Amino acid sequence: MVQTITSLHNPTVKNLVKLRQRRARDRQQLVLIDGARALHLALHNTFPVITLYFTAEVAHTYADLLQRARVAGITLQEVSAAVFHKIGYGDNPDGVLGVASQPQGHLTALPARGLPLYVVTEGLEKPGNLGAILRSADAAGVTGLIVCDSQTDIWNPNVIRASQGAFCTVPIASATAPEVLDWLRQRHIQILVATPSASQCYTEIDLRLPSALIMGAEHTGVSAIWHNEIPIRIPMAGQVDSLNVAQAASILLFEAVRQRRQDQTADTLPGDSVLH
Amino acid sequence: MVQTITSLHNPTVKNLVKLRQRRARDRQQLVLIDGARALHLALHNTFPVITLYFTAEVAHTYADLLQRARVAGITLQEVSAAVFHKIGYGDNPDGVLGVASQPQGHLTALPARGLPLYVVTEGLEKPGNLGAILRSADAAGVTGLIVCDSQTDIWNPNVIRASQGAFCTVPIASATAPEVLDWLRQRHIQILVATPSASQCYTEIDLRLPSALIMGAEHTGVSAIWHNEIPIRIPMAGQVDSLNVAQAASILLFEAVRQRRQDQTADTLPGDSVLH
Image (cartoon, rainbow over all chains, first blue to last red; front, side, top):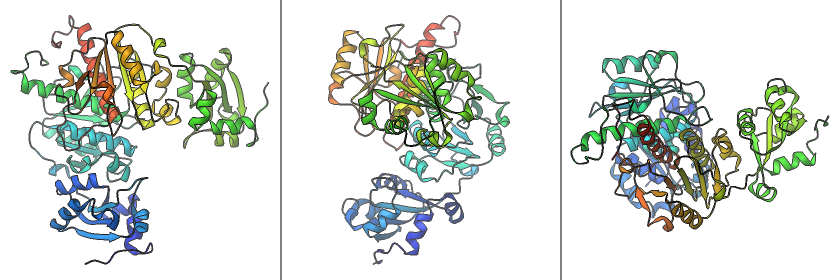
């Protein structure tokens, strides 16, 4: 039986606090997972959780989670409420916190199953947007999310939180933009670049083809490397000159879902129709 | 010429700080507008701006905005950089801040033009979500946003900021859910309720009809009052059990846009198709 950590000066506690910073996460190649919901998904998806910290107060509430972690060979470490207050995140921490290894996330490790649909984010700044895109990517059943030159790391606690657990259900890769461009071209995946000035509307594109959606940074959009690919726009009826990047990604992803579902169900839903 | 405000103890300065709180906004029926971009849209849309605060440093950069405000009869009040630091919002304030009257927002004041498309939010908690919905509503060209029983007020600074100015381009009304339900029924508007458990997919609905999309609170969804209306769902392929409410609203709104655009352009885009 491992002893309960009660000291705020315990080196493990100090390190868990440090892991809220990117530098420590990058150096140690670790990621923090806050909350029971995300941890359930992490265990279910065999995300490489190493240690699970919990308080005595929640041991009964999350008995299933703790048992599942135990069976998976994950170290369980009880901490006092005061220690959890220090290491937990947000206003209402659940009383459970996991530490996991950062998956390597090479392009080559992305799954090759099914009809490819990738989201590529380039230079995104806001963790909340990256998290929201992950959540929509999960719902849309994408093949993978590819992160290029992000200003925020994918393992930022606010990405993890906004993703509601999708960080461990969506295959994720990181690479430079040139690497991603080469990789997509070699696989003959149509490369669709969200660009407000594009002449072609996204609904005019056959998204039943293997596709990658390139989403640029909040203020500056995509870089020049994508300028030879297919620009697509979302029609804007209003006066605000752009959509939030996560909203735009969701709209594009679910148009792909719509077209692909219609294709599957064309026989049974004659009222529906297919593009082209 | 009005004298520059340089004292942090000036009662106007103290009141501007107070207006960051809902209680003061509600009592005084005022709203703060941060930043040049939002103020440009406010003036362009004759939003009832009363006073515009600015620093000498930005008077040249925003000369157009100040001139436009002057012509519109808005009081211009210069403040010192130290005062602006106190009254401005966020990390990089522009050096311009407006105070406006809160529009009354009665249902009866919503425009009756065109083919109705309303978004109704019920019990939303997060200002960022309400702001993001406003931004997508602007882009989709909705007839109006109707806010019921919101946990956050529509004039919260984070709503204003996330909306990127859409708070003054989208017609907004506030009412109780029963009032909204009656109002929509009287106008024969189909009432579509976003519900994860619905059997009908949103793409199977004819959104070219006058429509209202009912979006429930982040955790609890819609209230029982909507249970006799038409439930619709967004198909979820992943493991996370719900979409963010702002993402869901954007997906539904742009499906309506898609169907309505196809209807308009059916003659010129034979490759496209129309539902039903």
